[in-house]
Image 1 (cartoon, rainbow, N blue to C red):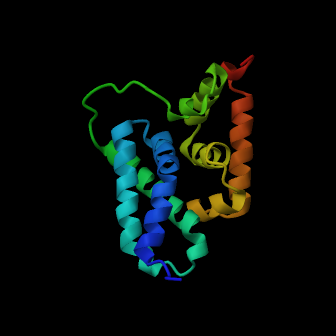
Image 2: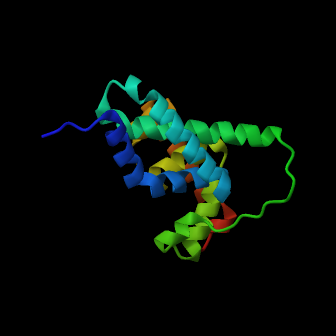
Length: 165
């Protein structure tokens, strides 16, 4: 049996997970075009650096770390630029999963958390990563990830918009 090339392995992984990548990028960028740009940048970086990946078993964590870093870089660039228009929050991609109005309210509340908490909450509860995977993606130690998830949950519990939701 013929062994797959590095390019084939990476291509198959990207194609089979493209919707997840977009959803995660959108959760950071809150804009369709910016999310697509971040996914594209992450893919280019992945192809450029794939030869340096020593452990192919870590492909998932490695790629998500690239994507998260691209999104964070994109957000930093956006803050430096002067916005031309007032962007309104549109079309949360999680609606595709059939979330009801309560789910959308919760997602909006998670989106409004401080970035360091929002990042781990999205990875944990919307992308369904383990604490270990989140630590690998973010470069944080596991106890920091756990404490940020706990703090995020506590902030959500105190959120008045979620009372009765």
